[in-house]
Structure formats: C-alpha cells, structure tokens
Amino acid sequence: MQLDLDAVIRVLPTAILAAAAWGLTWLATGSMDAADWLPYAFLAGLLVVVVLVTGAATRPGKLELVGLSALVGLAVWEAISAAWSPVPSLARDEGLLTLFYALALVVPLLTLRTDGDRVFAAGAIAAEAGLLAVATALELRFGGNQADHFFSGRLSFPISYPNAQAAAFLVGFWPAVVLAAQRRRPVWTRALALAAATAISSGWLTAQSKGGVLAIGISAVLVFAVSPLRLRLAVPTLVAAGLTAAAYGPLTEPFRSSGDAQLVADVRRTGTTILLLTVAGAVAGAIYALADRRLRLGARAHRAVAITALVATLVAVAAGTAVVVARVDLHQQWREFKSAPTNAASSHLLQLGSYRYDIWRVAWQEFEDHPLAGIGSRGFAVAYLERRHSPDTPVRAHSFELDALSELGIVGFALVLAALVPLLVPIVAGTLSRDAAATAAFGGAAYWLAHASVDWLWTVPACGLPFFLLLGLGEPRGKRAALGRRPALALACAVAVVGLLAFVPPWLSARLTVRGQTAWAKRLDPLSVEPYVAQAARSPTPQGAIDQLRWAVRKEPRVVELRFALASAYRRAGEKRAARAELLQAKRLDPGEPRIDEALRALR
Image 1 (cartoon, rainbow, N blue to C red):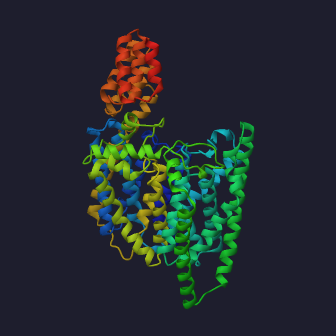
Image 2 (cartoon, rainbow, N blue to C red; image 1 turned 45 degrees about the vertical axis):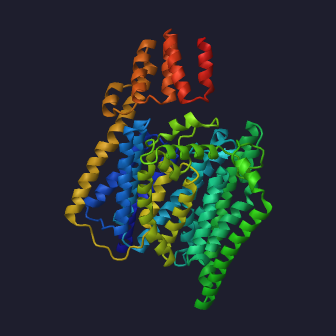
Image 3 (tube, rainbow, N blue to C red; image 1 turned 90 degrees about the vertical axis):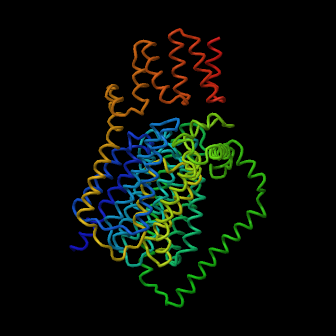
C-alpha cells in the first residue's frame, strides 16, 4: 500500500499539469492570450521548484537533457527575435510559452521513476481528454446557448477554434487505447479507458477537423507498423473507431442544420449521442477485458497473428493509396484545395477547399526573404496581410514547421529539431521494445506532430501542454540516480527567479490594464501596447486618444489595427489630413482590407 501511495505522489505533479490542460481548455477557453495562461505557467514552475526542494527529483537522461536544453534555447531565441519582430510583446509571449512547455516537459522527467509511474501518468492525460469530451457532451445536451457552441456547423466549444478543440481531444486517444489494451489492468480501468477513447473519438468527429483525421490516420499507420503491441491495440482502436463511425450521422448533423431552432435540437442530439457512445465504449471495454482474461494465445500463435496484423496494415495502406491514385482526380482535388472553402458537402470533412495553400505560400516566401533569422516570432500575421490573396487573417501559418522557418529562420528551425528529435528517439526505441508508456507517448506525439503540421496547435497551450507531458514520460526509465542536493537547490532557485521575473510582470500588467491602472501596467510590461490602447479607449477627448495611440504605433508601426485606430481618432478630432496619412500607411500594410478603402472614401 505504501508503494502505491508513493507512486501516486510521484505521478501527482504530472497529473496536476494534465488537469491544468483541462483548465486551460474549459476555464480559459483555450485562449492564446498570455494573460490567461501565464498563471498556469507559474504553476508549472512552482511544481518544479517543489520537486527540486523536496529532494524527490531524479537525473534526466542525456538525450532528454539535450532536448530540454534546445527547448529552452528556442524560448530564448524567440524572445530575442522581439528585436526585429513587428509585434515585440507577442514575440516575448511566444518565448514564455515555449518556456512553459519546457517546465511541463521537465516535471515528468524529474518525478516519474518506474514504468508503472509512466503508465499511470499517461492514464492521467487520457483521463483529462476523456473527461473534457464528456463535459462537453453534457454541456451540449443540458446546457444553454447551444447555437453558440458551433461555428459553421462544427463544434467550437469550449475552444472557439474547432481544429484546436479536436486536438485537445485527440492528444489523449492513444494513451487511452494503450491503457485499455493492457491485460494486467483491472476490468474497470480498461472499461473507463475505452470509454475515454470513444468519447475522444466522437468529440473529434463533432469538431470535424480534417487535420485531425489526417493526423490520427498517420499516427495509426505508424503505431501499427512500429509497435509490437499492435495486436493488443487493434481491438480498442477498432471499437472506438467503429462506434464513432456508426454515429457519423447524428455527430455531424449540426453541419446540415437549417435555422437556429433546428440547430439547437441537433446539438442536443449530438451531446446525447456522445454520452451514449461513451457508455457503449465502457461496456465494450469491460466485455473485452473479461474475454481477454480467458483467451490466451501461445507464443507462436501470437507471433503469427501479430505479423498478420502488420501485413494487413501495410496492405491496407498500399490498397488505399492505389484506390486514391486510380479513382480520385488529383488535379481536381488540388484545384479545390487552392480554392475558398464552401458548405456544399454533407460535412466539413468532405470539403477540400481552404486558405491553407495561400497561407503556406506566404510563409515560404517570408522564409526565402529572411532565411537565417526569420521575420521575428509571431510576425506572420502581420506579414500575411501584405501578401495575401485571400480574405483570411490567420494568426499563424497553420504549420509549426513553417512558423519556425518563416518567423525564426534556419536558427529557430534547427532549435525545434534539436528539441524534438532527442526526445523522440528513446520513445521510438521504447515502443519497439513493447514498453506501454512509450507506445502511448509515441502514438500521441505522432498524432500531435502530424496535426500541428497543418494547424496552429503549438500556440494553443491547451493543446501543447499534454504533448510535452507525453514527451516527458515517454522514455523508459531503468535505473536513474537521484539529482544531487546542491544542483537541485541551485536549479530550484533559477526556476523560481525566472518564474517571478518572466511570468508575473506581464500577467500583472494585463490585469492592471483591465482595471484601468495603465500607468503601472506600462511600467511592468514596457513591450505591451495594450495599456496605451486601453487608455485611449477611456480617454474623454479625441486628442487624449491620439496621444496614447501614437505611442502604440511607435511600438508596433506595422500593425494595421493600431494605424486604423489612430486614423479614426484623428478623424474624430477633425484632423483629416493626418487621418488620411495613417489610412494610407494601413493600406500599404494591408492592401486587401475593405474597411480601409471605405474609411478613405468617407474622408473625401
């Protein structure tokens, strides 16, 4: 019993951060605003300090230290890029977010000592995603404002971006499947794990993320091709996928709804369907666990079936590829991919049109123009407005690789690779050696990386936090020495100082800005323009607003919204020539914005 309690204590910090991911999704609605996630980053730092001070920390492996060091280096490089980024405060925030991820990574590295600890921690991530899906279903069925929870017929609750919402679910899918597949686990544990996998899968389908289906498909191919546990994983995977596919109609019905009343009814039906599927997954998991106890294959039979499953996976991939090549007009699909999205199909998953081609085109052009250091972290949103051929206004390049190349250049991209590759190598090795936690981390990481290659997930901490927790728990532990007392205390002091000096001031500044105490807000965060914008909005005279907005424009001269706001203030003050000058600057920065043309015509 004492050993079990010790294991719970060791896993608790990782479980707390998994719960923090739930809070970032549900309470902070997946916000990218630093003011919303900085308290969680401070919590991660506090957990690291507590672990180090109590003497419970173990020494990470060499590859883990390399990856962790590169991740911290990436955070520093992002912060340095504020010197040439068009949005210095956001560049600094991106560096703090990466530092947050580094703290999340280090928590399982320092605390998880046994393979049982690692499986337990993976289960916490699966539970977080599963509970998120169930809580969402309960809100859809019994809550209010159902029509507000969907955007263009896709689930956009609690995160307003459906693709990020799908990722918040799917990152826990493979940990849930691995837990459901383990024969030694109690029946109720396996039943709940399969229930979580089913809830996660059905929640994703409700969000209708094409990037999600592509990524989970790629991860499935990799898991079943690489993991010797493929035979065990096949049953829970097929059960969760089969139950979700059987409910395709009611789960995607809001996409086809006409009118608010019909949409509300369809959303409630969707919530009911997710809950029923979750219960069905639990029942199927219990039946599977009971049958699994009685059915045992010999070593030769098990090897034969496993090889058959591997061959079947490879044949299915080859056959699917052949069908696509033979029956799909790839040229037509490419033209549709380059065109604007429409609502002509029966679900969003059957639409290929998007603005990603244009987004990726601009990102690559920015990298070609600034190959070494990029345009500065978080600068893509500004750069895209100058070169866009679409009405879209994306915050990021919808690909973490292109974000790194365009904004941070070759240096930043090299740091991303140096952070991820050393962490993934031992996870792949552990997967090949039948390690359950490594398999869960491998599946989750493969999914996340594939999805983050076509969507902006890195910038959403509710999606990024579970990913880095999986990377931290993935490597098999073996025997590890305890971290020495002196280095542990020195590291604890460093983390505490960084947490207080890096995370607290910008958070306090944002809070004071909301309360109208902008003088102190400006002192605490000299990079932020928000105190100036807030003070301008509260100014009783146009001239007072002009003075504040001038300061904001000096800090971020390439931000169109600031130029437009300053022009509006000039217009209210009767200074039409100055207003026109600002609007022309805004026009240069964003030639495709119709509001600017309308404002220029109004001045005439």
